[in-house]
Length: 106
Length: 251
Image (cartoon, rainbow over all chains, first blue to last red; front, side, top):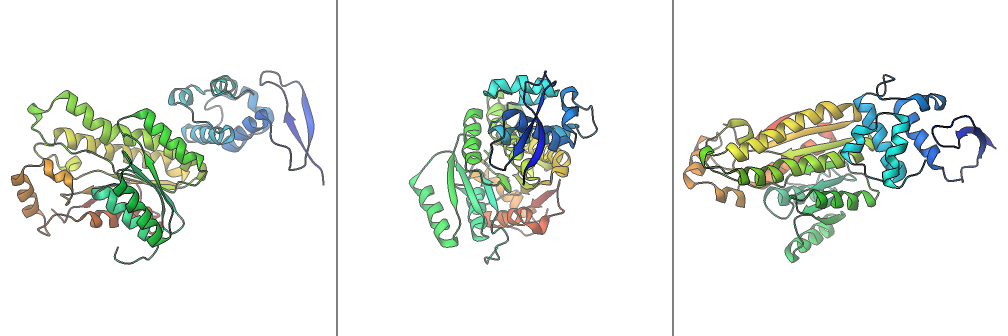
């Protein structure tokens, strides 16, 4: 059975295009899919809300939720973030910029 | 614990300062209880390797040596990367490694203050920052920090050592509050005088006075401190967090 899900396939600042990708359970996730999944699972939000998200914009993005996001990102991209970067990650778009330091291109 | 009730079977633990004293006793007690262990020590030695190999075979547990100098943040970070690379859970962290120091307040140098705080506070602070990120992913974990009654009682000659342990106690209480909702518990064991090399830095008169003031009239065996650590690490302590447990024979 084919399960279709909506995934954003472009850089975070350009959300005008989306694609329907067949999920066969075999395809590895793209970086943007991993990045979005971390936000969605940490904050229980919908994908279309992500681009405008900033720290404490929703109740779930509090200090605890922030650490849940960080650990999800570290696991998704197999990285260890520096404390300064953890503090600086104040928005969805800022996170994409910070991850470049860890050779993660979204 | 005198018998293998296997309170920790299937759990993975990180223990620092495993090669002697209280840390060695905790290593032995955790192995007896079935825990798999990342046994941290400053450097490799034949005696340490023989110890962990013997425990591993005797109790059918995995014990992986991890070496780092607690005074080096870079080495701590590398050690955590080594642990994380195994992709195993970390259910328990025991911050045990520490250094002792006794001197009157006016005789305590800033160099010594920094040295003691680097080992007794900064190292567990940094290690716990990294390890709790692994625990947050799991939404579970137990942190046990080995402090000292010197961090509570304010005994003469303990301005440096006692302050470093008081800082560790405070850190633990904060962690318990901040990480509780992530399923992580954090507790302190505050041993009294314990029969380890560390008491060699204390004046004999102070040791005698402490021993006499103990309700039980003796100093602790390292295994008695380790037993408290087993309890706090186990699911038997599942609703205990943010606490300081004195293991001092009563005073």
